[in-house]
Image 1 (cartoon, rainbow, N blue to C red):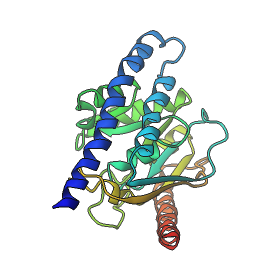
Image 2: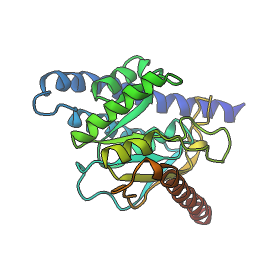
Image 3: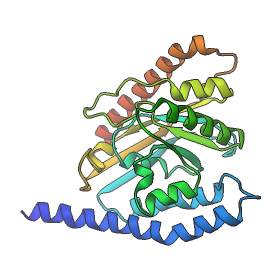
Image 4: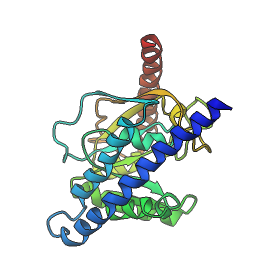
Amino acid sequence: MLRRLNDTLASIWTWAILGSLVVLCFPLILVWRILGGPLDPWNYAGGLLFRRIAWAVQAVTPRWRFEQRGRYPADPRLPYVAVANHESFADIILISTLPWEMKWLSKASLMMIPVFGWTMWAVRDVRVHRGRASSARDAMKACAARLKGRVSVMIFPEGTRSRSDEMLPFKDGAFRLAIETGTPILPLALHGTRQAIAKHDWRIGRTHAVVEVLEPEPVEGLTMADLPALKQRVRERIGAARERLKEEVRSEK
């Protein structure tokens, strides 16, 4: 009983901090989207502010130890199609601690959450209605526009969180986008977020979670005939890095 009470109180603390910071930042981000459009059409500055909330949330959550590894892009405005495995809602928080801005491809239901979803709209994230082919096409066009504006996009190619420890198959969208726009892929490997926030659970768990930035995967000269091999190669790289991270985190305990 005491443990469950502690879990509940710890979870309320983290969600309250997240909600409060989003409420505080939303007006600033919205105003900049409206007034700063001529200077910052994709609201890059507003997006940076929004993602920085993740730093505060993980810093004040004693149950979480979030870590970033790997080599960051030298130029944050050199666009990439970033892709990562998907374990938990906490993936969003962990990836957002990386020190550059990316526009997220997100399911429409998440962007309908009051204030949080409105802020995603204000920073020009891209929504997609799952299962609608026309929505997926429109979303990829929107992602391509952001890449053209020298802003990276972030996509979970599994499409949803895996219920088990195994990665789901990768979908084509991110890799088609990369080939069509000539934009290199930036693979991200995640481990540990499943324990931070379990699927279909709002409670906060104890974890050491890591995101590792892998070397970019070039797409220059590739055609759609190369898409299956590209997708498989990136999935294998992320999978291998994820297994390595598991061993490294386990050995550090």
